[in-house]
Image (cartoon, rainbow, N blue to C red):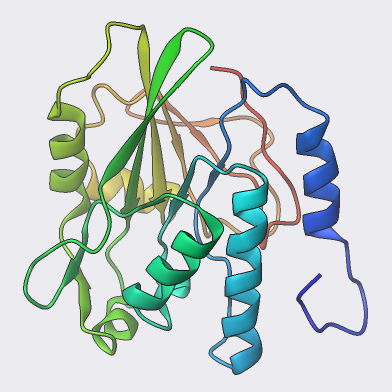
Length: 219
């Protein structure tokens, strides 16, 4: 584990790897950001290591939360490319207004297509993004734009929204979630949601803090 802690190491990546390798290849695996906490060189190495592990686990999409961007979008893009991990970030913008990552990714598996949309809530952390020449556009527009894109398949489809922010922020900043099958949020505290919450009748899931637990849902 690339954590550096002397106590209370939980073996998160090793346990996660074994759990997922024992499961069906039909699963879809997503990460909702927040892979690192600090800004030390150790955190940089941790980010790179975790992206490599995510790639080995065949992660289908990583939503870029603001902690993942402490070293800039280019660094995250480099590590994601090295690890072969697709990054989604629908409302992230460079200083020139361009998007460093796609807003969504479509995955086909087990006779169904899943669109995975990434977005981040607006808030005080935007000043941290500004240090690296990044900003956030309104997430509601990014989500609606991603939902409006045509599907390239006639398979039954569903939409997973990865929102790096709380359920309350999702409710306030994305007033129309029509078309979203399920939303996954972040920053809700230590414990995962024991039952899904509801935002506009969309089930909202939270798998807990710091990757200590792995959420599993059947769609």
